[in-house]
Amino acid sequence: MDPIERFLPVTVAIPDPERFILFPYFVVPVELFTRGLLSPPRYDYLWVLVNAVTGQAEERETRAIRLVREGPGGTRIQPRIGPDQAAPAAENAAASGGRRGWGLMRGADAYGVRRRIAPCRRVWALQGGVITDTYTGRALRQDALLGTLLGGLDACEG
Image 1 (cartoon, rainbow, N blue to C red):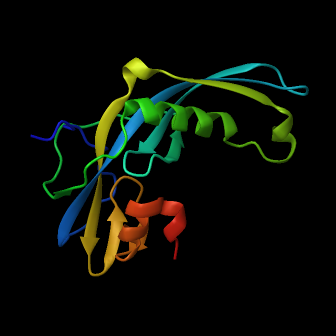
Image 2 (cartoon, helix red, strand yellow):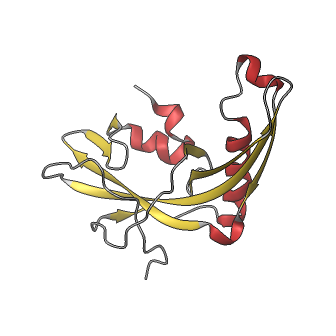
């Protein structure tokens, strides 16, 4: 029995896919406090998606991510990290996000709310040599799946 029972919502429908591949993720809520010389202090609440295979934080959301209980059947990839490793990855991504140019002068403190970390599955649809993320609509070549498993999405663009 798979302990991960919830899924990221399918926002992009793929007509008649050959198969589904279900990647494990953690949704990590993060409290972020930023302050700077030229800006007032600011408190934000973010949701960060952490890949449970590679341990990389992939996306930051400013709105709550609503997980669903029903999802398609398919090949289930097993997680390699747990929530204890996902929280620091999410904290680092939240604290460093958007810090370019003058943003480097800002200070940021991030705290992952560990008691609210939610494991879930992200559904990828395989069709005709292309694998598509049904949450964001991002499409990659089928061979990029190996890069995703070994090093994350950033390593397999193209």
